[in-house]
Image (cartoon, rainbow over all chains, first blue to last red; front, side, top):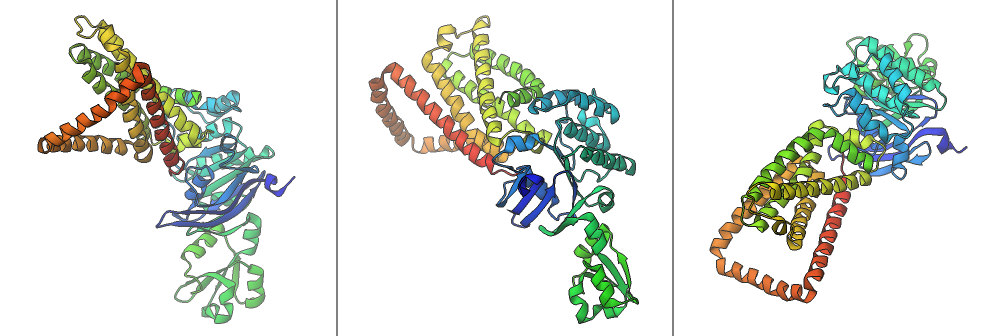
Length: 292
Length: 222
């Protein structure tokens, strides 16, 4: 089996120019059967990437392959295998959930009516209620039920947990974990709530200012990246190449490194070196003022 | 295509039925009181073309464009369904209005006046022109595009009236010249040939409008 077919999603050199914002040379791959978190601060380009995957935006350069198929040339087949949950779930607001299902289900050959009703019961959703009258959490649940009911092989979720209470966030994450237990199912999940990803993501792609900063397995990131805490000696020229972001306070300097082991070797025992969380990484890379 | 049309009809059922029935009754009463079948039919044609476009622009209201395009359909299929549905709605409205016009007691327009081949073709041609001109604007700019077109038509009408007063002899001469050019062409083609030519022009115009829409739609960001 070729490399392309083993990947649920493969993005190469994707670019989109809005004039005031440019997505540049976006390249990453999500292997089949895994969850990838797409993280970055607000305005980094996460939603733009997701919209480009679904051909909701016209790309300027690059290509996207989903299950080895070009997302434009095989648009219908690709979309029928994707379950998409928008950041603010948009359905036809004036229809009841039942009518929504009746309207949209015929588009999917693999629609599973039994699974849909099971999920509706599980999520405690009122089929007779208009979509516009649901709470944000319920709208998200319905969108998820919908995406899961057509037996999607790849779920793409754009900021699904923002604005949701912790209980539902945990439920959602549990559902996503359960989803990939079925072999071959994959999830791409954009968020700026990094703690969600530390729970479930296998891969992390971090984007900032329209560029991929890194795209790696989560465990590798959490193992390698570290926050170094010390005095002003950390600002020395010889350490510049070691750090990816530095924050200087009155007496303390904190710095992020992509190679914690190297930092330990070079800085010795006198410096405090802690494993970096995804939030630390995101903070230093976006707000840590470069190399001080 | 059928699923897309069914989806649009299901989504806009109340609007189509409610607005459509009111429109048909209003236009039929209006037609039945008029003496000039040509003028009222052309006025009606303009309104028939507006209704399906109003349906399509309701998508702006639902903010559902992104959802629609994340369904497993291509943009081409999406647009084709809109053209077919648009034509179906226009033809149903036209047929409904015409039949009701005849049925209204005391109507001044009988079956033969309403269903003259030449008039039917002109109405369809006029619908195709309005629909074909407006669709690209609706695709590119949504409801705002339609409003801009209607305002543009109003301004053009006012400008035309103003210019008509200023250059009446020249305009009359121009219209006469067009008539003199088309008269022999029409005579040469004969009634059947003229009708066929009109149908061909109508089809070419509609196809051109569709291609422009497709070009715009495939590049549109939602």
